[in-house]
Image (cartoon, rainbow, N blue to C red; front, side, top):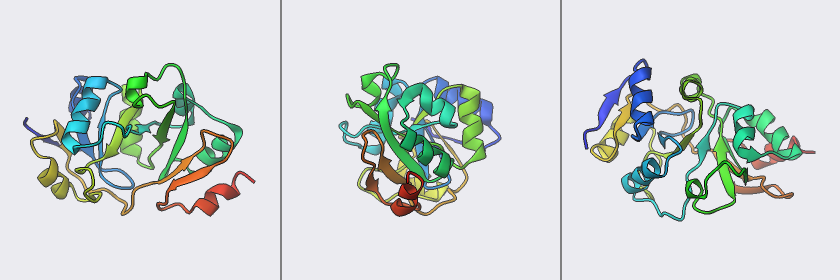
Length: 201
């Protein structure tokens, strides 16, 4: 597979790559991401490229809370958390709606969702009109990557394209589970869990 290198200005070509079922590596506000459309075959390509366990579902990346509500049930506390910390380095696990196929979540009834603090990604998702399925752009069990040259070295020949610009963060997002009444911390990242809980009180 040839991995095409893009600039952020190549928006139309990038959209065509994604719509055709390709997988794309791109910088985010946290670490480098690897994304595709909500398509089972495209997602399989991500699992193969990352050598990722099929039991680990892929997170969804949305443009804002309105899009989140199209695909997941948002409780009162979850809405406070989303409004308080998105866009940003927060991933929130919610109960998925019926329009999210089980193949997109590995059979789970929940889905992890993030709104990145990145105008270019928001524009990309907005132009496509649907979320992207996005995980970190690295081989599973390897560390998250920040530099596009490191991603290219690790992923060249395994992905369809990549945006040649470095990620802006240094840590993967904080993950909280808000799918039940009790909010739980699943992974500590740039946003402290205590700060997240404060907005629900």
